[in-house]
Amino acid sequence: MTNMIDIKQNLNLVEQQISQTCQQYHRSRQEITLVAVSKTKPFTMIEQVYFAGQYDFGENYLQEALLKINALRHLPKITWHFIGPIQSNKTKQIAENFSWVQSIDRAKIASRLNEQRLGQDSALNVCIQVNISGEESKSGVAVNDVFPLAHHISGCENLTLRGLMAIPEKQISSESYHIMGELFAKLKDKYPQIDTLSLGMSGDLSPAIAAGSTLVRIGTAIFGEREYSAHTTDMNKG
Ligand SMILES: *Cc1c(COP(=O)(O)O)cnc(C)c1O
Image (cartoon, rainbow, N blue to C red; front, side):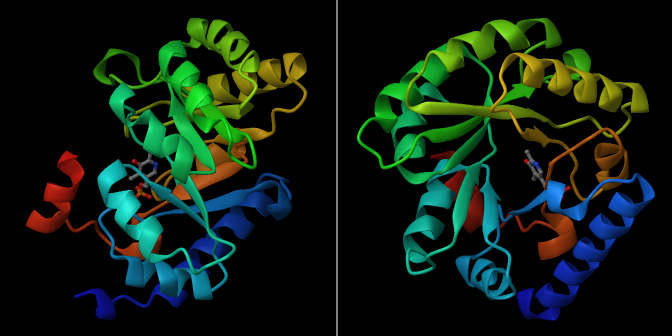
């Protein structure tokens, strides 16, 4: 199955799509980081993507991610982003194994990550996950709770607040992208180190980049459809 996918070609197509969308909306390609979302995919595929020049990877499930992180310790430039829901009993391993956590949605999780990052060489880069899809989605803080949480995180010395992340529901309006763009600008006014608006996946690069996204998280368009085999499902329980 997996060798039927031409990863290098997929990556080139995604790269082209990002560049063209940047041109269309008068953005510079350099403003946008591509994170390849590798959940359910084997580390051998990640290695292929890495050797094609893509170094940032996103994972959603801790146990699955740890197996791949350990298998790929020989790749010096690899950068791991945790982008999934966070249970509080998992924060220690997240703090110790990732460079970024994009899915912070409560103060308690931020505090735990802060304590457990102590002793690492660098601060943990974090984003606040915002719920712009309303009640259907459980993950993320409401727009009104972003500033209080940002204030809490800015007091955590082992965390660097880098910005905001959102996962829009498929049927969401362009208005919601616009709201994220404005929230990002306001937060940046208050916290000058903020530089990351993590918005845009395989199906919505264009409205995300139009709204000011600086980081896109692309899974399917690079790795193909996800494979929820018994094996990965097992790993994802932990
Ligand atoms: C799975 C996932 C992605 C990638 O989605 P695709 O549609 O496959 O590109 C991006 N962000 C998050 C948070 C995800 O869970």
